[in-house]
Image (cartoon, rainbow, N blue to C red):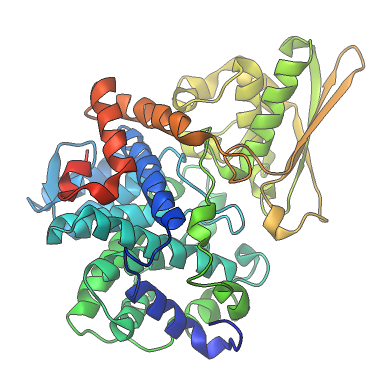
Length: 462
């Protein structure tokens, strides 16, 4: 498929791929990855159901929209597919604990799983249908991320990378609705008309947008798929056209050959990383380094006099402006802070969901350590290695301790395993708005990991 790739083939190729995925022809590695991501994402949605910030407003909006077939996860009610996707998507990234495609830094399933689950419940789809849709949607999101030429965030004033998830949501919803390639293209174009977030949200400390962004993405994908199924037409080049996704939001800089390489043969969604800590993936190398140094060297945190972080250019925003990152005003700002997460790791020897609560944000021991963190950008690290990091701790006795992490824990090369992911799911479920017992959660985790064997997808909705 990729030997004679041109820019003009991108929309056609991705639409055809998404429309023609079939359970029987999807390799087992991709099906297993979809089930693993379903487990992981459902857990983070459960935890997100009890999150503050902007999340409660999305839940109430869904509740007020009336009854329907689709579950609002962790909240004990159902509503329309579009509004369930909105609420579940808002919860999906709320605790910043979901999977990541480290190569592109796309979080595909934060929008894909809410969209797919909402539509699957509405149409009475089987577990196999749901898994197939997740494969299609997550792959589209990853492939769009791979198609950028360079750092997509530097090309415009838009918050570009999260938008990839909206197209993944459209692909997942469209696959469940049986859209052919032509209508799938229109679903992508109709998605384009609904999402265009400003990068100002990255710079504004009190913003809730980073927390709830995937609610908009999931809902946009569901709405677009239903409209396309009904015959609504937008235009035919949603990705490669001069006024398509890359033209409008990436300055026209994209590489279709990179995005389509091995499409249908190698599944990028089977190369996702699963987070061991509930914070931005860009902070994980530094959390890991801090924990390793704490565990392998003899020192007291009171002996630390300076902390130096070497970061990639993509994740420098997790260090600037320093006053925001060293004293974050909200949980989501703290999760996007290398100084704060390093402070937590060194002070507490762990990083957990509760470490971003209101009281935890004012912990003097954490803030003292965060205030010591300075950073330097390593411009030699390529974009594909943006999650790399190096941490140096300087002690009062003159020692200088350094640890570098190239691929943070949870990467496919360093997996955390199903047992750890089930434990993570249980931990998330125990703090949900409507918590269940550990035994109930472990039973649900087993069903999610074997979703392809389930006939009624509602049994997977918590």
